[in-house]
Length: 184
Image (cartoon, rainbow, N blue to C red):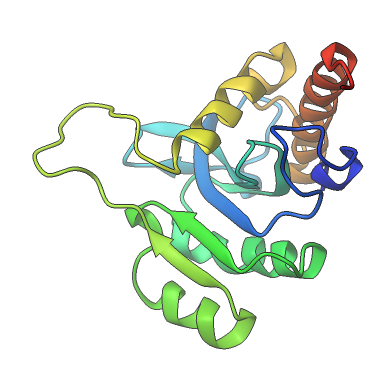
């Protein structure tokens, strides 16, 4: 989505086209303007709102986004997200995800999309938040998105409008990163 617009080799010395991605979701509270049909209750987070399902590259740049009701499970929303990711970035072969994406999704992604989905498991005995390898990139991207006032809470009537707000937030971030980059 946004990663192809970064000139080759300007972000951490990586190739222009990504070969790996990280997927995750975040539940966002919905304002009164959000209709009942496009919101849901996430029992795990005890939040009434929508979920942002995103895929980022290993640098944390947004590759794909899908907005659903908060009641949609991660593995159910992952199918259209991975389809969009594969259609936009055919070079991606590896996707890291948390345990919410485990199950039949891993086999489906291998058979239908030729994607290898690796589940990054929590550490044994982990009860609090711990930064996990390969997963910190997507968590950092969520924090970048939440730095913009308009994306902290979902005010948009339509899910695609909220997705556009998230894309704008990432465009602003990328523009700032590129403006501070000094070519060598």
